[in-house]
Image 1 (cartoon, rainbow, N blue to C red):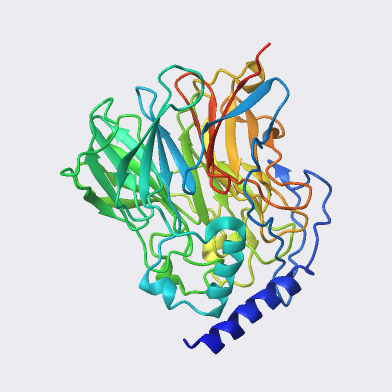
Image 2 (tube, helix red, strand yellow):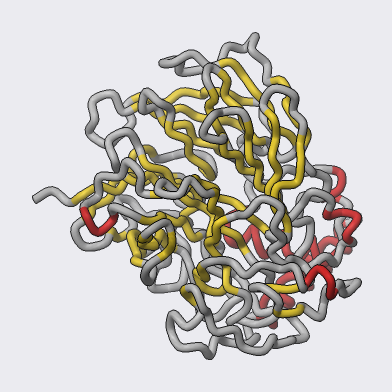
Length: 443
């Protein structure tokens, strides 16, 4: 493409973002779209989608998010390169996936809409090249700051989820699950131990590129979350095979089956400690209004269908889906708990092993990356949803906030969350390039 054409496209993208900023606003009362029975207004169709992004700025010197009363936060590690996901090893070392969307032939050939959306996401801090590595952090003296940092594994392909089973570490690249041998205490994987593929994962355009994995309790299976290849199927359902889904992968053979489907963009997954059920957080569809559709937290049933793209939040039909599939809508299961429209829930960790006080003893911590298709902004925080008898039992509590400054700039954006060996909450911040650590406030 010649430079004049690029200039025209860039100007068009800028104009579209400016016009989109004049789109609709939320009209629901605060928290009306949160909980087991959220309010779902009628869809709003606009010529240009609402775009309202907190531009990525990064933290000023000494800046940090605000912790809830009774808690305090410090930087475990700074100066990382787009840290997205966290995994705590049995010896307490913390693995950080430094990653971003891969550039593939399919993405380079994508249409104008995809190109414009790429410009929009770049404004939000998602346009940097992928570091394609996993970094190891070690806090040997227990002061909450990693004094050891090493490149654990590099040369990956937009890595995200990680899972250790025995002496094998599995990594979810954007296009496959790979594995490497692991030795406890190692600060790097030997160069000779090149990653070996266990199973391919849907790739290509990778509209949603992040792939997470979670090992079963017995270590015999991996569960892989795979987001959709579109907002609502507009790239054709032939491009959605085994997408908008959670896949079950046998760790011995790599054999893969569809575990659950209709989940537009599942990310964080975890086993609920009391019931042993699989739970996930899911990003729902965009471009039908600031109040639709709530992202959600839900248990995941084997063989269940959760609606995407034909319906949302159970059997609310999305008229944009083509072809319409009423027989699929009739099968759609409503999720357990709405987190609010466009909060971009990504990270999920249950409080098992947490030592943050009785207020955070039984529930789920959720990293919310923040909205782009809503006015006013939503998400850009870490919340805690209390659980009782294996189910959500109250409204979310903000654990970390203050990621957006008074001028509307994003100093940070939370993604993955994890509980470390000492019971603190870790949060990956991919705009601030920090891993935050939350613990009880010193008396």
